[in-house]
Image (cartoon, rainbow, N blue to C red; front, side):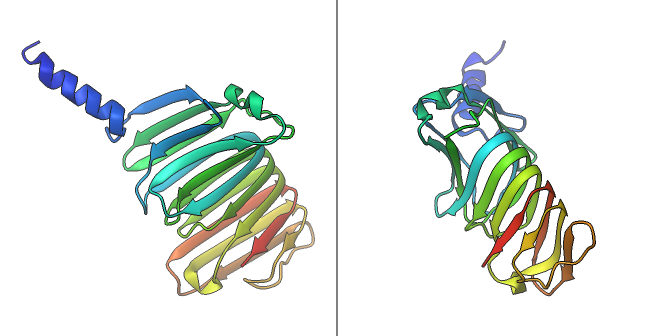
Length: 201
């Protein structure tokens, strides 16, 4: 090894700021809170299994995960895996207690958000950017803001209802769907297989 000090410096940099391609971090939720850097305007891919989750936009350029509720002592069971690759961040939360525990994920307000969740309740508020959200079973509530902000909207519920007429009345004999094109710059895709979708302004 010709320059061990240079290699050490690069290793420390990758670990501390997490911007090296392919950098991965795996940890448990300690003291009911986890934080990592995320630049405003970046893309975030969330992978959630089951539970009660809130995604909230904030003015900070960080991802912040915290747990609250009667079972907060069990939050240390939550496993967090964060991976940075090609300018995007993948965040996976697993082993989340399903009863009397709510997990809040704060992200920069300007974030292109992708989320996949198996079951439970999911809410998204205060996030401005592309949104691609799918929930297999449960209820999803999303603050959509102004309808004029979107270039393409694709909303659907297979077994359940859509509440909110910001993009027009839902249609469909089995399930409900809304599709609309506009002059905005963001894309909105939301699908719930079994459950209800609520749109808030």
